Structures are given as C-alpha cells and as structure tokens.
Image (tube, rainbow over all chains, first blue to last red; front, side):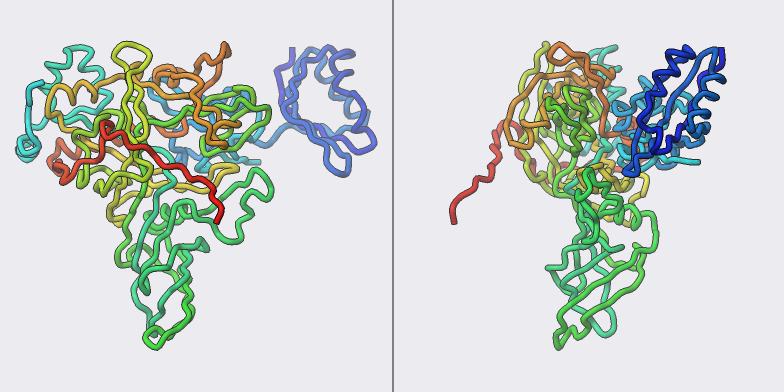
Length: 134
Length: 401
C-alpha cells in the first residue's frame, strides 16, 4: 500500500460541484482525510487532504482527467524555537495533536510529521512562533 | 507554630553563602519526603514563579528635552499611542495600547499584531523605536511636533509599572455556547471543546503565600528578568482562601500585585509582546517572588502541591461577558496539568495560557540569585490586605445622569 500523502487539489469553477471525493472512495477504495476545504467567490475550490490506499495512483489520474490540478502539499508549519515561550495556548487548538505538552517538563513539543498544516496555530500562538513556510 | 527565623537571619545567611533555597516545586517534593516540620527547619527560602500574559502592565518614561522644547500632549512609540497627560516629556505606555490604524476586530477575529506589549519588548531588546509627539506650543515649550528614533539607552527613566500582575488564582475558562469564541483566555471551542487555565499552580507566587504573610509593599522580586519591587496591592485585589473539595486543599482567589522596576536592567526573554486572536495585544511578564520560611505554617502553604490547589471553571460563552458569577466546577491544577478534565460528564482537553516551563525557570533563576548572595530579601514596609480583610470588589452600575 502506498504511504499516506498530503496533497492539494484545485478545482476549476466548472467542476467544483462534482462529488469527486465520493468516487475516490467508492471506485478506488482510497482512504480520505479532508484537512481543509474552501470555495472562493469565483467558485474555484481548494482542498487539502491526506490520501492513502493501494490504488492511489489511479485515483490521482482520475482526478486529473476530471480537470483537477493535483499538487503535493508543499506548505509546512515551522516553529520558531527562539520565539516560543512554551505557554501551551496552541495545544488544545491543534486538531492533529502535533502540538502537545510534554510531561512533566511542561514544555510544548511540535511533531511536524503529525502536522496537517491547517494553520490554526499560526493564529492561536500569542507570540507568533508558528510560521508557514513554502 | 513556633518561629523558625527572621528576615534578618535569612539575609545574614545569604551574605555568608549559607542560605538554603528551594523552588516551590522542590519544596513540594521535599515536604512529601521529610514532612513540613523538618522541611521548615532546613529551608530558609522558597522561590516561586509565573510567566503569563498580564494586561495591566506598562512603562512610564521620560524622553528628555529637545531644542527647542516641546510639551508633548500626545506621544507614540512605533505608532502605538502613549498617554501624555502628564509633564512635558513624560508619558505612560500600556501593554494593550494599539495603533489608531489597527483594524481591531473589524474583520473578526482581529490579529492585533503590534501593540504596547510589543513596543516594551522591542525597547528592552535594545531595538530602535520611532518616537513621535505633538504639543500645542507654549511660550516655554514652543515646538509643536517632533519625530525621531530612540533606544532604551537614550531615554532617561524607563520604569516597568504594572497595576495588576500575578493573580493569586485564575479561572479555568470554557465555552458552553455553540460557536467558537476568541477570548483573553485563548480560542475556546463550543460545547466544552477545550478548557484553558492560566496559573502556574504549585509555583504561583500568591498561591504559595495565600494569606500574604510575607509579601507586601517593598518586597524585592524577580521582574522581567531583572530586579523589581512590589509597589502596592494590584487593582481588583480581593484575596480569598476557602477550603477546597479534598482534605487540606484550598481554593484561593483574587489577590494581585502592583509591581515596578527599572526596565533598563530587564531582559526581552521575560517581557514578550503578545497578540491574542480576537482579543488584543498584551505582554507576557515573568515574575518570581521569594517566600521566606519564617515558620512552619509558611512552609506548609509554600509546599502545597498541584492536587491541593483548585481553580474555578467558568463559562466564557455567556456567564463571563454578562458578569454572571457561576462556578461550573472546581478542578485541581494536577487535573488541569494532566491535559484532560471531566466536566459535566464530558472529557475536555485542557491547555495552559501561561508558561509553566517559564515559571519553573524563573523560580530556579531566583533561587540561584539568592544562593549566590546577589539578592537579599526585604521585609515588607506595609502588609497588603489579606484574605481576612474580606475586600469586596465594587461593580459598576449604570445610573441615569
């Protein structure tokens, strides 16, 4: 089975209303974890998801045939270690458990492998220690 | 309980390098091992610490006279307004002040990227800061406007003067409502999605001397990485100590400190500007208070562990904004620090808003200062009102004019 990969899908306005994720699951048996989805005022859609399953490549080809632009997720979150004061304000906000408190040191740890780049922490951090990098 | 020692005796030991100092965390472990009586016999000083966002902080400063002179009525540092309604070149900059052109919450939740707390951090870091001032012009102060760049070294006095810091105990904030809210206690998810607290528990200064027996006007403290003093009680000072839900536990509330110190000897690491999403700008302040072990009772309270210190859980969805005082539950700092509490039958993830790791480091630094002999203790010149005074806070009621 192919490893899980995080990808960005960009849907042109003409196909933004099609239930493509449904077909990824039904026809290709893929496991989908939608991290973020957005449709802009021009009706173009963007979706960030984790995708895994044996027929991963076929699924990606299917999406491309439908006109979806598929790109690997190149954004990542980096912690500015110098700036972090280990308050912990990000830890209950992080949906992926990537930011958590180590006990008993009570220091904040960041596991970037677990990070789903939802970017909530970049706004929740009082000292702006969480940064998006491309 | 018999007196063990006096301030003078402790200071004499500090001078001779014979003082025994432990952090409040170490005191907890020690008392568990040898008991209060023996710990009180051995230990002279217990150090505490806290490193959290404290909005009622600020600096007053004097920026020197220009030629020709100006009587500044309005002053800005890096575009953040300071209060100029005092003498010609004096001003006060508050931690939560924001530039007039900040979008605030017009696009909710606002980001509040740069405010008074950030200016204070930049100043203490030695960074150049843009100073702008205007005045109306007088015969003795003819100039009407000035704009220049200054660093902390160019200013005369720069005094960190905080009206209310180091809350004895604080609410654990939750949201019972159905939408996410953005508060000074952080982002609170709906339907008890998370619980945020903001006290260093067993390291917290006023929780470790809950009856304020040793902390008063003139107490020398660790402030922002340098030395500071307790100036007075903080605003909204209303200390309380009630018995908690388990034996030997306490629920303390409401004691606060007003503190001050020379900003020029403080460190940017312990004064950090902060932006609280949807709420505003503020300043993380590092404070450490030494507690002299004058007798066993002082050691008893200074060594109370997290599972004997309780915090009230309060709804910030509706109750808090409406000033409705309702405590949903009492939870211990041991539970809060575990990362999960159970509330109304639901498991709720917890997160701190103040840095426990920072608090521990402050208590350790203060311990080293005292052990090295560079930091002597001061006996308060006046006590602060303690819990026995039963201070009741006034509320503000709306009256017809």
